[in-house]
Length: 333
Image (cartoon, rainbow, N blue to C red):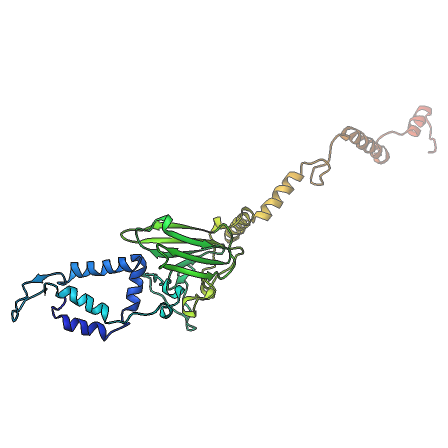
């Protein structure tokens, strides 16, 4: 718990001016304004310190904790008055005052290349205000928001070239008119996603107008918030391709398996099937000869055979031999 010596505490706050600015800026956005921030701060003092503990305040007495009546209020007033009032002209620019950025928190360890760029995580990376992932066709950015954020609390001005995104009051802008790395589709959208515990995220889904890998969501991202696009996982899931491309991929994979097994490829199988069907088509050179004129051919063969026997059989009587026998004499042939 805090010390009860108010003077020491006052000295501490005046000698560390600006030390906790980033911490207060991160707390101011979700709080929704200065009054709410003060309420949260004094609530912290009430819950976790002895700031609201009151003792009798007897002079010379020693107390383990707390303050004499009115002492705590005097400390607050003294702290307030320790800083001078400023004219309106001396106030910070309006955009600076209303643009504290909520830093993205992630448990994923970010690794960097030798060139100082991030090694991709989910083909995306980690930025000061968001984490993001991407495919060839879309990019998704997650912005952490207060857990009680409602859709009507979100102010999202989403165009095809830039984004202005805020939550709650005008004092808290997540993104202030930043240009996208490339033009996006007008179909891009945002949703609120409530995670476990006290976490909530605003999910921005950007439809790309062409297939490409982005180094960052926004064009003006510093080098340490951009990714090395040469290290993205450029493989795509089968269902991310159109039907024609999916069919071509399946054909290639089938042919590779067939070749590994020593079997015909899809093209060879198609060719064999066509040839098999062609064998039985009329006029096919693969058909056996037709037998419609077979009887005549057989008769011709018989005649030739008979003629051969007539010419070459010496034992068969000829017409001349018959006449000689009838006359009983020789007859010249």
